[in-house]
Image (cartoon, rainbow, N blue to C red; front, side, top):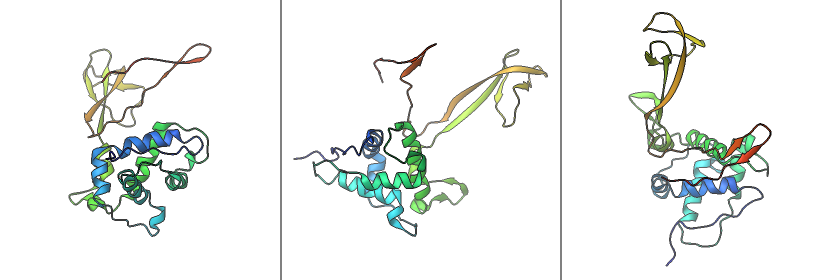
Length: 206
């Protein structure tokens, strides 16, 4: 009996960057449950241009039980249409593709799960935000008295410290204030030397 969800993707030139992200997304349990339960309500005038509709079709293909490789040409065309900086058959960055795809999916999810919470119209409640959105906190620390406060937009290189009441050099630290359900990490795998960049080979443990 075939294992559902295990299906290869045809490489359409140099689209391995897209295929690896598609494999990751189609095996994300919460996304799988959303798309296989037919919860998307398309509000676009042309459903054929909706990336969420295409992802729904893609999930159906992946979990249909068929083992022959799938050709994601429609997905590639829609990505080119809505994220033109990724258009063409050149190799692209997988992380950049993920960010662009999630952004387009977020925009095309209007109408799903009421889109926005009634008590906060600025807060999106679409499936993409539910799974992948977290919160960063940026702190600035005075190097003289070590007083720490949240960073405010528009601050200059030297910030007036509320602890020592003078302008001082400060350091900034980003921390995760709210973790997303699914956290995505971009790992750099090259080291820049004085004359050339070299690949870094190291085992990953998690």
